[in-house]
Image 1: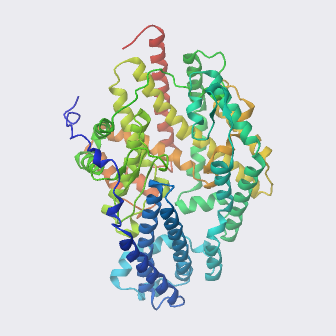
Image 2: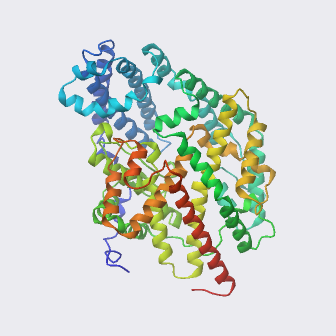
Image 3: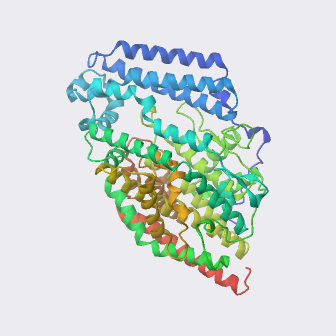
Length: 603
């Protein structure tokens, strides 16, 4: 164990396992002050419509200050609501803040079209030197959109429709999360199947439990397939209308243009991943043999390879493990990360009525808060590392960048979090005490890679296909979506996995298809993170420092430029290929371990 590993910090105080939102607003009166300040900014923005360029400086300042206020207000209200979703006060306040956000968006909707109509000298001539220096980069980024900005009146209409344009997404969410009735499980003594416990049931060692959960999930979805399909098709059509209005060749180009990412990044990802499908097929064949399955069905692919299951890991031990695993990132990084665990960044444990899952949130004027539902299993240790990766990315971006450039683009959002997970995975694999533990950890890495790179790329391919069809004039039904998905699933899983008929309806379970060309970012982010984690583990201080500068990049440069500065040039297929080579090497290591296990080895 290295000296860094031996640096044990004090245990986690039990009083430090709830986040402290009072640091944002100590009471309702403090929140009301910012609400009033925001309303004043909205009023000024409304008063100054038509006053560009003469009052440009004041308008930009009101817009920036208003945006900063509403982010803080809305984030606080939603996090308070998530503490206890049954609390009517915060349900009401969250809705009020959402309404105020829409009001602010409407009041500021004229700014971008007006800026687009100005000549550069008109902008510079109506700003002070200090104002121009601050807004110059943002104005450059805005000018990219010049060919796609509509008139002031048209932008106002589109902005006014913000509250209803997500109708298909909202309807889908309400159907899947609230209205859909799932059946009970005969093999689990009448326990009700839910979307939340579905994957847990697919990890059950009893085949009859897995098969029943699988069949009943898709039998249930079959009853609403036309509703889900209609919502997805409407969502696609709405996006195609906006793309045409904004003069984009396609929805995909519109969404990637917003990311400042070229189509080649998306297409390179798919083509390189498909090169490595034989390695994925080998992985599934190894799983089939290791599990002793005469047939491997779609409901078997989540079954753990090893029976060893480390449970009840105390939270303070999880914190120390994550700190040690991230030691290659340097003292400053891990000390700040540890300080966050002690200064009430994290709401750790599950409670009745608390929102499930995990996320990292916060604003420029708050701590980077984390919601967790820590239960003590290894997966939650990885979740802790992941969310702390997001939070440290936010911490550095806000520390280095001024407010206007502090938000990092969505394309980069999963890089820092996944880098942390990979560092943790390698740390634990190196310290595994026996074959069973090492098998479990390597398979955990491979499952994560499979789920984030291969699976998300399959989703990205599905999304590319359905949009191309709709944009060429086809109307897609549930059967069309299922047919496209069925063929892709067969291609990705290969001959080692039986293509159960029900799996063709899995597209109905993927909410990300309502997020519009989002899923490819998971795969590119994981690929970049695999490369960066490898660099960091080599221990060169220059590589580490470049990575920390990357974390502080915020949104000043384009995402591809930021990654290129640390060597992860995602415009080239080579970075994806190098990540897939890591997957291939881990599959080979898995094969060797399984061989050793079959020969009776234990160490």
